[in-house]
Length: 345
Ligand code: UFG
Image 1 (tube, rainbow, N blue to C red):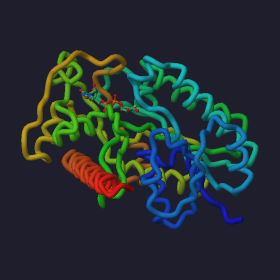
Image 2 (image 1 turned 180 degrees about the vertical axis):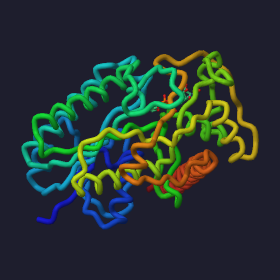
Image 3 (image 1 turned 60 degrees about the vertical axis):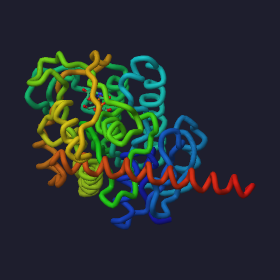
Image 4 (image 1 turned 45 degrees about the vertical axis):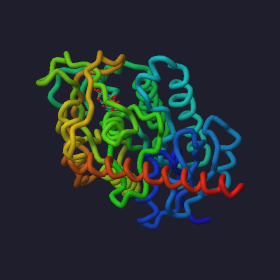
């Protein structure tokens, strides 16, 4: 059979943007997703979807034996830092143990290209203006440690299996959505700043709370390197091309190299909304570090990655319009439901 690409977690927020770009470039895609946070609605072309959990070895086995994969893009994971502090085993199980399940199948079926979703959280607290891939690793929460373990697993696998090659992408703070508003973050219990702030602007929640105003930064709030999901998705396609061209295993930061404080992000959301939003100041959130900014020289050089949405306003605008669309859709669903009810359907 023709070879295809396996995308675990392809119905999730980031995975689905990558799936969309892969389909648009003509690649065959097969997805495994348990739909716990992802949604079928995030698939806009007719990619093959296997609904199931990657902890299910039988299911993983049957997918690998049914198709011939040229590469695996492994997104499926739990990703919420504060939740990981409260439920560490969920993170070690979903992110570390289950990844081993996927990597093991890759080895047994001879799939030797892996693109792996890691996180800037592996750097943890640092005093650096920018972190490079060789900066010290100091993960401060179970989420970050569960991902760093996967990085070690991949690197040890590579040492034992010279045929295997991977790109580990360390994502900085991903936000925004597809520019045509077809897909975006759907999770109703969002914790990420830009989504939460857009929800506050649009009345889905009454306010946004700033977690900590006493950090050692210029305005006392945390600094992050926010990156548009479309640019991040493109980095995945370029990672795959790099591996196909014989590129060696590598770890790459995926951020823009500039930092924004929480207050600066909230200002950008107010600009998109054209009105002030309700903001309150709260305590620090457990597991947070004061600042993380990427040095992205390596990815730009090796993959020739050229990001195009670096401006925070384009990230926030797309996030804001996506949120508006979700509200419109849920209102019309509610209307259809009540019409059906009154018609006794
Ligand atoms: N924040 C608030 N109020 C909120 C939500 C967030 O003040 O309601 C603050 C946080 O304290 C933090 C910043 O906004 O300072 C960003 O928080 P997010 O929850 O949006 O993102 P995190 O930085 O905690 O984590 C994200 C991803 C991780 C990734 C990390 C890299 O979830 O996977 O970015 O920096 F590792």
